[in-house]
Length: 166
Image 1: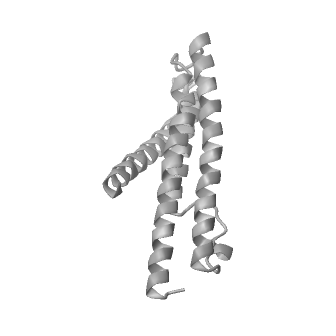
Image 2 (image 1 turned 60 degrees about the vertical axis):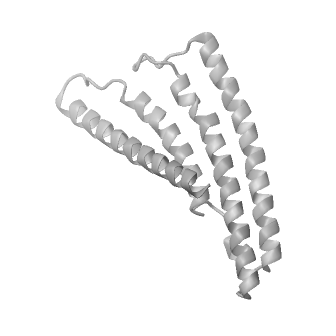
């Protein structure tokens, strides 16, 4: 399990870095061209930026779960006994997965509609599905990351409980 998540970590981090780099470079070039040229050759920059932003957001959320960088109430839960911390970790994972099931269903509905009506980005001339598919794919990654974070929290709490580090 550790090897799989190290590989997923690498893919997510590379995707986030590449996405942010493309977004910054494209927007910078667009601003420069708009300032110096009467018409910008990058009419599709806004669409591309939105497309990439959806992907890096979903990848970032998934990565945040595994690295405990997500918004949480650790100020409160860290003060609780280890048994209660385990309950909260499992409950948080359950709630996250329940939400991600809704996101998957909604995202797949959007993808199916876009395929049905063949919607395209006007500037990029590609299907909008490339952006919308990020929702269900990201939700699956977030679900796995949520489970992984809960497992690590439970392991850590049990280990601390056994060693008496409460």
